[in-house]
Image (cartoon, rainbow, N blue to C red):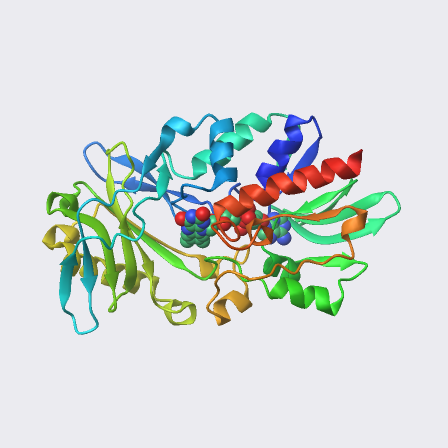
Length: 358
Ligand SMILES: Cc1cc2nc3c(=O)[nH]c(=O)nc-3n(C[C@H](O)[C@H](O)[C@H](O)COP(=O)(O)OP(=O)(O)OC[C@H]3O[C@@H](n4cnc5c(N)ncnc54)[C@H](O)[C@@H]3O)c2cc1C
C-alpha cells in the first residue's frame, strides 16, 4: 500500500518508477483470498485476510479514497445488537455496548479495492515488477543500484532514488546495504515491530446471518478461544455473510495445527452463536507469522505493538534512499502501523523523492 501510494503520487507528476514486489501479487498485508463456495449456484467469495477497517479522522486515507473515487463504497462496520462474552470458566454473557469496532468503516470490495484502483490509475508511468525480491541497495556516484532476485535470476536497477517501503524488520533481515548500515542503524530498524505481523485471522462464511437474526452484532470476546476477538465480516451487498476472528494462540504453538484450529473455531462459534454456526459454506485461516515478507523471528518472539519512536537509518538518506511503509509513519493516533500510516508515509516519501529530483 505504501509503495503503491508513493508510485501513484509520482505518476501524477509523470515521474517514472518501478515498483519491485517480492510476492506474486500486489498489496502486501492487504490480501484477498478467493474461496470457492459450494452453493446453488456455486460462487467465489472474496475475503480480506489482512486489514478490514479504517476510522474517522484518518485524513490521509480519507483523501486517498476520495482521489480514487471510492467514497460511495465506504460503509460502517456492522455493530448493531448484543456482543457475546465467553469467560474462562465457560460462562457466556450477552451484553450491549461492547462492540469494539463500532464507528469504524469498511470498503465495498474490501481493502484490495484500494490496491486495484491505485494500480489502474498509475497507468504506464510506473511498472509493477512482481516476484522480485530486493536483496541489496548500493550507492554510487550516479545514484542507487538495487539488486533483485527474480524467478531465480539476479537483476539490477539503476535509479536516482529508492523508496524502501518494506517493514523495517524485514529490511534488516533481508536487505544488505553498501556502504553497510551501522550497528546502531540495524538495531534501530529491528526495534520497530511490524503491526499485526504475527497474527492469524480466521474467516468463516455462512449462507445466512443467523447472529443478526438473534439481535447479536457478531462481536464476541473470548477467554477460551481459539478465537479471542470476533466480528461480523459480511460484505455490504449481502450475497454472503461472514464472521471473522483473531486467533489467540501464540505463533509457535499454532504451527502445524491450522486445521485443528479451524475445527475448534467452528465449535466455538456454535457455543457463542448457536447451532447454525456448525454449517459454514467456507472457512479460511491466514497465519501471517508464516509469511516471511511480513513477519520476522523478532515479531514471533515478542508481543508486537506500536513504537513510541521511529528510528530509521540516516546514513543513506542524503544519497537517494527514502524510507516509507506504515511503520515509518507518525506515531500516536491511528497512523503508525495502520493503513493510514501506509498512505501518509508513501505520499511523504514521493514528495521527498521529487524534492531530490529538482
Ligand atoms: C491481520 C491484519 C489485520 C490488520 N487490520 C488492520 C485494520 O483493520 N486497519 C488498519 O488500518 N490496519 C490493519 N492492519 C495493518 C495494515 O495491514 C498495514 O498497516 C498496511 O497494510 C501496511 O502497508 P505497508 O505498505 O506499509 O506494508 P506492507 O503491506 O507490509 O507492504 C510491504 C511490501 O513489501 C514487500 N516486500 C517485503 N520484502 C520484500 C523484498 N525483499 N523485496 C521486495 N518486496 C518486498 C511485501 O511483499 C509487501 O508487499 C492489519 C494487518 C494485518 C496483518
